[in-house]
Length: 170
Image (cartoon, rainbow, N blue to C red; front, side):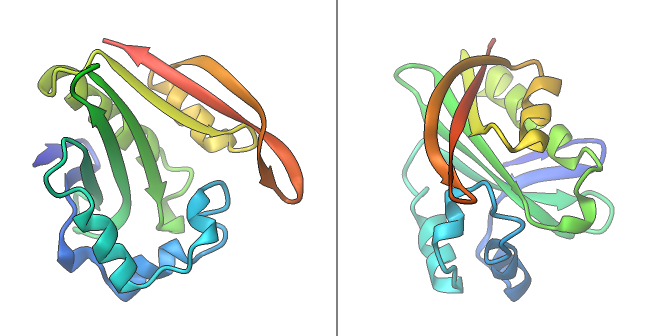
């Protein structure tokens, strides 16, 4: 699978993507600050097991690759429920050098559009903590609307924080 954008290529995540640099993204406290990945100490083996968890499922695990130089910038997931024609997507931009350059916004839009046009999905959802302004902007810039709030759902910096859920219908 490959989805080509202006600056990125979304493609199936491969074993060769599990490099020391990739694992270091996942162990970087700034990268995973708003993710529950922050509670896990990642290893090449843990990432291989995660990749394998998508085998024989409808869900997808993608690499975000720089279109010009092939560098791995991050990953995306789409947990797909074929019965309900829904997908919950997530993103992690691990390469901090591209933060603030709309790589996440482009990648999110590419995957959403693919799901709507090629995967028979009628609704895409995503969630983030209310303090994660970058992620909220990604979802809003891609036409998603706030659907629900789980009040004081998770703990960030020792304080209860709301989880916000966004959606977009086809």
